Length: 264
Image (cartoon, rainbow, N blue to C red):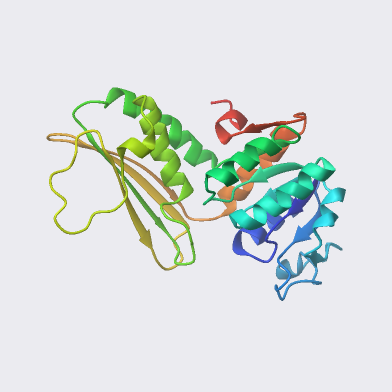
């Protein structure tokens, strides 16, 4: 599969490049994209590894025409621009970008009518196994337990709560047959009053170089259940993305999530 990788000089972009280059029998890096102001434009995509790939980092989106699949972990506005070009050229897309508004999500669904897309807030296999565990726990603990979602990420993350935390809340709300927006408590400050039964609280930490920590608490009387996932490396997101790319090889169109990729 011929791969294009967006955000090629970023932390996640570099991890994706490294992971793809480590699987030469399955993937060929053909495009490395970055924004026009990046100092990496014109450099070899493998330079940070001391490797020569022959693929130069570019801001020319039309280069996507030579790829089978784009992997994109950038910003919503950038991802949507890339998506337009992918639809134009029939390129499959893996979207790990978070922070989309409703219009952005609708644009992704619309693009799925033309090309195959995996769109997930977290590409980690472990996180998606955790989501399945949360679904089971939420059904068992639907009464008599207060739910809180905690997440922590590095200081450079620009959206909050994280897409993964939101997905965790959505999984629990869906298990209770209710929309998350009706249940979510996003902030607490001052005299908040007693906690409302059936609500889902969210707490956020931003600091240092935390890759990603998520814990969901089911707090009952006399006991507490905690379901936790901690990421110590972006490699898990890269490996999940490559697994998603292989999943799309025989898919002509449609929007899929990682639960579909993993057969969950």
